Image (tube, rainbow over all chains, first blue to last red):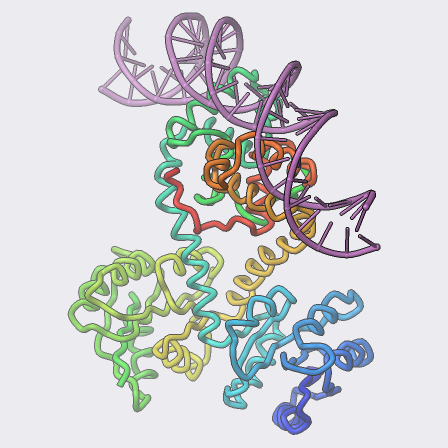
Length: 224
Length: 224
DNA sequence: GCGCATCTCCGTCTTTTGGGGGAGGTCCGA
DNA sequence: TCGGACCTCCCCCAAAAGACGGAGATGCGC
């Protein structure tokens, strides 16, 4: 049985969603909330599996509430953001807050139910337009890699290793130590790869590494 | 009327999908193909709106065929990748190839029809697990920004500008020229921001800029 | 064997970078 | 009005980086 909570500041909308969901044999609406603050408290109290969360609400908006609920380690629930319009504005904040779904309120009831089940099973459900945008962003980044990867292939194995180390913020001395070679050799490799790639210094090499996908945002702890 | 083409090397599967889709009043299957090469030709000949494309096929796989079909400027169609297993392995290549959908063959017929309609309307449809992964990747990148952004806020406006310039691969002299200040002043700012951020040199500063989102992959032409 | 690419290392040299301190200016808030 | 933050510029200095040429060793394919 899926335990669901519905959060919306309009009681009528809230009840409507609840009725739709409660009508399903395997879904039970265990709580409702009308503000973000209520939602945070109710989530702790009732421990729902799935939360349907409106964004625009008084006192605390749905995104903030989502972030707080998911931050709390004592809850293991998933959140579907339900909004009326302007997905563009909120979607990235929603995803960052940890939402597993982002759908518009104009979807048919069956689709809403389907979204709840999908998310409960560990999947995610986005409005079709949102999915499209997410894909475009991804494709753009993936596409950028290929052009530059051709340049990358002109490097020898060792030079690529050195480039990776440079992109990790290492100095020549540190690279030498890491690769068990002399500092002079590192300088040779650096000069060589800069020349092959048409770059001027190691700072540009770092930019290149990120742009072509050799280095990736998120894989590095910037503590140095 | 949505004009659909079905591409699969197994005739039985192909016919099955075609029958499911042809059964819908607003969908018409205008072509079928059994190999990637056939698909490319048929797409040009029949100009379908939507293509359901299998991945594993003889002669040319579905991803390659997708890329070729979408490269051709004379066609304006959208592709949904239909695969049996291993979405992980192919999904990124599929998105790069330009696919608008990526679904598993075990979905219910209604969902397949829904996917076709969604994609035809300009949206996108991914298998729930895929969507989840895409979101995680995004959230990870967006999340990484916040921690470091706190460090970013310790910088003055000018220092942030200099950091951006560093992240663009500029030398101190170039930065001075760009900001209409003296080279000595640039050095002052650089020293100051390195110290504040706990970094050693400009290469690490570039890494930091990318990791915290000050610089973004794809926004830069690495021609220098 | 020979040519070729690669990896390794060594010099020397110039340029860039980064640290240190000092100093004058503005602007803003206490 | 006075301190503090900021931007600007200067000095000197040491370290790092990068360009340049040379050279020995390996392995691979013709």
